Amino acid sequence: MALTSLLSPSLLSPLGIQTISVAALGKRLNLAFNDFDGSPIPSGFDQLTSLTHLNLSWLSFYGQIPLEISRLTTLVSLDLSSNQYSNGSIYSSLSQLHFLSELDLSRNNLSSVVPSFPGRLRKLILQDCVPNFIGNLSSLTSLHLAECGLHGKFPHSVFQLPNLHIIDIPYNPLVAINLLEFPQNNTLQQLILSGAGFSGKIPDSLSNLKFLTHLDLSNCNLSGSLPSSLMNLTKLQYLDLSDNRLSGPIPSSYGNELLNLKAINLGNNLLNGTIPTSLFSLPSLYKLDLTGNQLSGQLGEIYNASSSQLVILHLDSNKLQGMIPRFIFQLTKLHQLSVSSNNFSGVVELSLFQNLQKLSSLDLSDNNLSVQYGSGNSSFVSIPQFEYLLLRSCNISTFPNFLRNQEQLKQLDLSYNKISGEIPKWIGEVGNGSLYYLNLSHNVLQGIEPSPHLLLHAFSILDLSFNMLNGSLPIPQPSILYFSVSNNNLSGEIPPSICSATYLKSP
Image (cartoon, rainbow, N blue to C red; front, side, top):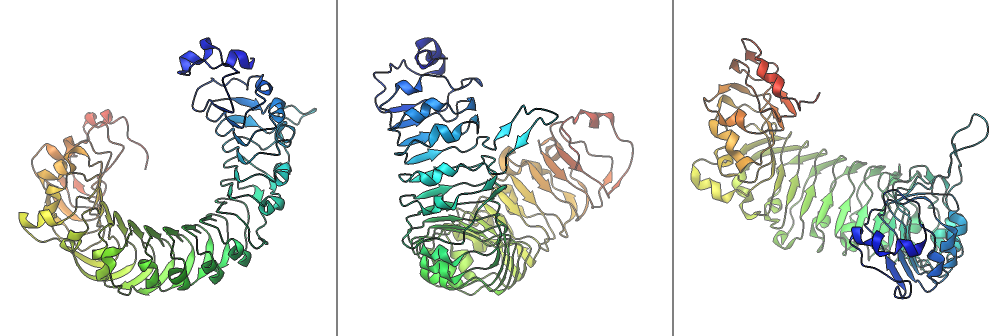
């Protein structure tokens, strides 16, 4: 297919694109987010000799990147992301683009698969398939190679490029990256290597990246301690070192020096020691995720918590102790709070959250807490409108009445408590139809109040197991995905109508 036909009215009109003449194209051509139905890249791009910006992303193109693109020597920006391009002649196609500043090859298959090799071999994956020519593109300012199936050793010369501001190559687990050396005064602003195939310690030379604002080394098999040298990255706004094997304490210097931090994710590591209270006082921080570590001790109090910008606070699955500190209830911008699976103790009155009216997700599960919620209708108005409320193992003995006023609830977990009696008829009306997950397992419930509301509600997941329910088997709606009433005192026959629940999945 020639480019003249690519730009013809008959092809472009069904795609909602206006007719474009080659003369009128000027210096930019953007055909992104159209559907060319798995066709190869058309010929004729070499006619567009004045192009500086070419965007062919999300077009369902497949095959090799055409050699013709190498003749577009004035290209500054090239986006070929999210197609089905193969490696093929990528070296010849792109290595001559000396003025290229922005290159995005993300979400393609650049693993150099050779489909027809003589003999029995039908597929050969070359082990050094990272495009080395990239290290010679001295004008390059941004490089995006996410999910490209890269193999082999990533050229270290890329990290030495003098004008490079963004390296974005996540989710290439078979590529080997050497982070041993970063020169001083490096211009990098974003270094995103999540899921890359390297291990070892975080190099101290990262402190040379004075202009860095984004650092993502998550899921990279890193070990060792968090280096104090990172405090030199004073422009850093986003730090993600989650899903590694990092150990030792969190340096208090992070909270004292990295004053521009907006998001910190250190979750799912082996960090220990106490949490520096200075982290909670960072003036711009909106997300703090320390999930799944071995952090212990009590959380200290902080002043001026009401001025905090925290929106997301995840401290679950650690070894934190003591009472939940008062400053938590002054974080007025908070949307998500999870402190589950710790050793917190004491009484938590849900009315303490009355100043957190933006709070939509709350998880207090699996601590040594006793959650209380007042009585009567007067306490309803002081409790935020939740979407996710997880109160598993919180020493609750009765159904909380405030639930009747929850109009947006999607998930409710009251399992592993001490709730007895009957499931009230109003429970199926909670959330005004939005409640799709209800877990009441491991209580001492004896029955369900005579009402159609509970089981006529269209739950996706309903768990009533490990109670003392008696009588006949309750029948859920046909749209349910998971339904458990095991380990109860039910009797009678299983009615054939249970077979209408055709969406049920295996646990």
